[in-house]
Image (cartoon, rainbow, N blue to C red; front, side):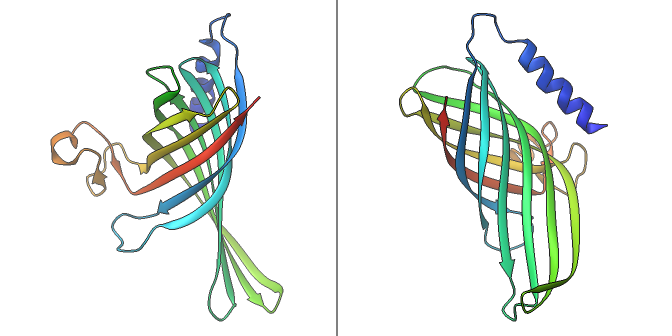
Length: 192
């Protein structure tokens, strides 16, 4: 049910492209610092990954990103691999060399647990989760064919659960959704 909704939003964004606008496609790398659950008092985990960005109009872009993190316990008997995939719509309120943006979209989050004996994987189990995300960021153009970006994303948005943290605190909490996690992202995109 959620996939057709996301596909419909992306299709509407693409159809809204003016005929005179030239689409710009880019690919790049990024680093992310992820807090899976803001209720836990643990440090953020660093992920490495990449993104594909397509500027479909001067004020609209779509992004598909994949991040990866792998960790093995001290005894080397358990390895945990995480790889979130996010599809985002980016809206730029202004154009220029420095362009802030709003973003929102869907994320598919997978965590794979592997039991190890030496170099051999004995058992494995993958847990998958789905969640909405939203945030703000900015892109600094580095000439015509590159851009440096950074953003902050609220993850696992919840529209109606009072147990999650509220975006905007008590003042805006009744209007804006709650969230469970968050992430900082920085990256470089090369445009073609």
